[in-house]
Image (cartoon, one colour):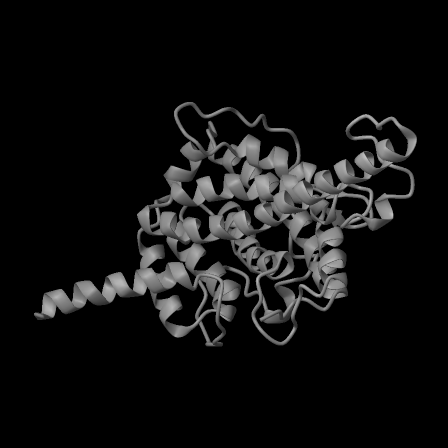
Length: 315
């Protein structure tokens, strides 16, 4: 294999490794930042940092439908705002729908980032499959209870009406199963022994943690993009720096090198004005703050739930 062939093979290998290991590993390293304000490591998860500009910029700029493109900032914001519920919880259905829109966003940033989005999409599909199986199990058990009731009384209950005292025997309880919200998923998987704190296992909680780390990266990137002046750091630099502050803390050396290649192909700032269909740069700033603030609200609630259940370091 010649020198050129070896170089091409190396680049392909790094990209493939990056996509496979996007949310895995750990290696700390010192970095230089383009961001105007250095964010200390212990401040990255601070509620005062995430979404700090959302209220002051929530004045309302209409989120227009952008013709001819899959990503719509309005759809993303709608799902993000539907996710938070009472008791510091997050509904999983709009949470995953928010990721669907963020995946579309990543795919607009170039082919390599599109490959990254495929890995994230595989994470959302894990939770969706678990939720689907849960729903099917509940429906099956309800039919069995109704059949038993019909045999005893000579009549059956209408489909969907619970048999008295049967919900306590159903997985996840009476509110539609374990995978309704972040907290219900955590409590159910812990009770069933699906979460292993010592070795890698496939669970909704572990998968959520990987998505959670990626969410912080995207939240800080959008926030820094809104905060940075037109003549300041490029989107590529901001994306690189926010990655180094967040996901890089959990990635190996080779994954970090592949990430650097991806950031070099990042579009210029004018691309993001068009992406959110803003008429002026000021309008772009307001929209980006609205979206990053909504992401911050979802992130903070998920962070609190992970902390309370001791899940921030799941293998």
